[in-house]
Image 1 (cartoon, rainbow, N blue to C red):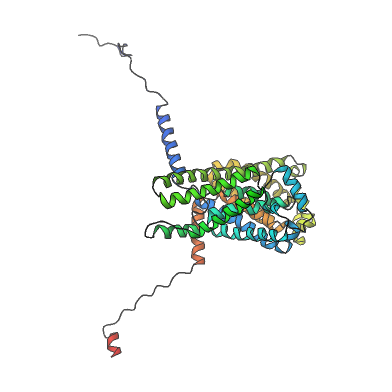
Image 2 (cartoon, rainbow, N blue to C red):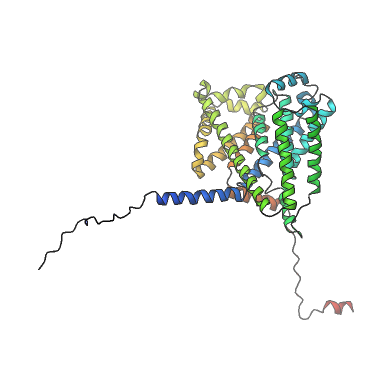
Length: 418
């Protein structure tokens, strides 16, 4: 009887076995994730509902502000402003800002720009010719705000920045007249949209831009930016009209990529606003001892309802809770983006806080601008549900007439006619 060899590692053979890399699966998973991410970003416009609600929010904020200040428009931005046209021109000459109101100091030109700003706000709000409206909306915001830089309450800074970002987004994919027109065009005979109104709008824009450039009223940067926007729109129309195949697919991919980048910048911008606001508050002694809210509640400029303001200021516990709560929410919000449920809770708290600021401190347009910026974080499911409910309320249900069944002994209609 022979003894079996003891169990143990086998002796090495002439050819060593290949050991699989522990990173092989990781690399394959990373490649698949990158491919899916690129397909998602370039295949369609990301966050279409969020971009639409941001578009609606900021255009509505600017529209309401311009309409409310219509009686005082000349003192704020026009010839009667304490910040005169010459002073504004000197400042813009040093900081190279853009303002269409600097092209002429006449009252007629001011009225044209102010009225056009209202019209483009309505266009963007309704999502009609969104590409054109987003550019003109940005021009209107910059023209008025850069004319009088000392007019505003903080929300104007957010509106100023977001108007530029919106020009790079495809914010008319849903909840817009453009989306309805696109559906009707796709259901047409050849699927092509001649778009004579859009051509007329961009032709007028090109003529005005040519006139201003010839007069030398545009700086080099803004001349390049506006002419590039015009050329891009012309290229888009030509490809859509005469090459609807692969060239249009490539342009769609580029537009979706630019849109995704702009939406990411908007998200980062909102996070920076809250993070910097929260950390600067921490450094203030009044925020540290929990009494910061007490002081604005006693300022005449921020007490539209004196009885309400004095009642809040008289309760030390409420003042302390709101003061500390504001700091905690602003500092913590950027970190809550990693947890959807916590983020949604803090988002609702911040929106309610801004609504309270609008009522208690009398800053409605600041609050509207911040709520519109916060809306970029709203979940898609909630926005779709809200949009469906809004459509059901605004559009009454059609009555469906069900024909009544005729009984056996009831004479037919032809018999009654006889």
